[in-house]
Image 1 (tube, rainbow, N blue to C red):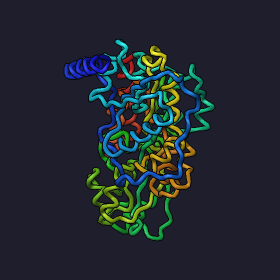
Image 2 (cartoon, rainbow, N blue to C red):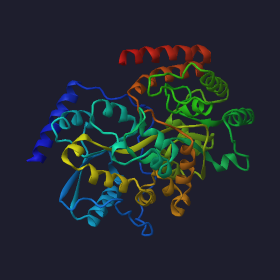
Image 3 (cartoon, rainbow, N blue to C red):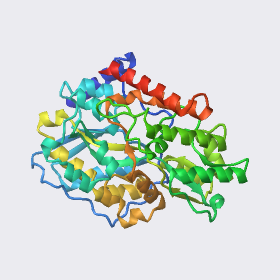
Image 4 (spheres, helix red, strand yellow):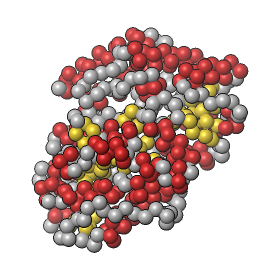
Length: 434
């Protein structure tokens, strides 16, 4: 009967979505969807699954998880949950992937037919908390001390909103410099944005038909791929929880000046495909991109390395506890599953299989994980990154910052002019939200 009701609510949600009754938070449209970097390997046998931190009730219980996992990733994730069920025979975990999870939640949760756990990106936290779909974990024994001793810095910061903890982080993703060793040769790698810019100028002077760094955000309306530059010069975020905007600031202007200088020694047009081809053909020494590009780079036969640079945006996949779990009396078991799945033991195992970057610090430090250059390289890059904003105000940032970056790159406006205009546009949009 309950499954029939869930299906009914999901159908209703899809109708609502089609009618445009709810608007989801704006996402960066230029970052390619993440794909497994290599074919999933056989699961390692050296990392035992973590035992539940508290003994769940002996009463039979079904925990429903609505998630966003798919493809080859899902196979290993399903096995992790089956392992939990094997260790806890009284617990059944039901995994579902709604087509439009936002509208589905808004229909199902008020009716008591929603999931117990939501597997979703951290940038959804603010919106889901505002409508009451998820509950803060502070009241269930999760402390900031626990978070900071267990997970990576950006992952911790990305699940805290309005001073409360709203999720547990599982994996992270973001961008770093991927360099072609054949092009870079014995060149000393840059350690700062200033060094990177100077090396780009020197490289261009010696190679007029090549570029040192390719980035699809260079010259494009793309606030995501240029973020490591702005944040690298000290911008804390484009927009914070309170709706404060940090775009018309000395730090942001310095980042804009860096972009203006880089535009003089770069390709006039840059995109994902152009950068991929340029790296493979030796026309670009480095490509500023994420782990989703690794499979293609390896297929191209590039001997590559990964170099952290600036402070990238860090997207965080999380598990959130719903108010339906509390209302059903499932919160204790659901939270135990959340702690199990985001644990170092489980995430190390999944990292080795799915090539994802764990949020758990001990998983990144696992010898087998640390031995993989891709995971170690991106893990280091994300360690100092800025979490994707989890406030609903973040939807106001993408267009104005992207447009300002284009104006700076093309020389249509000075950095100060472009960023002042972006600040005004974001503040006006936020005023409409309040």
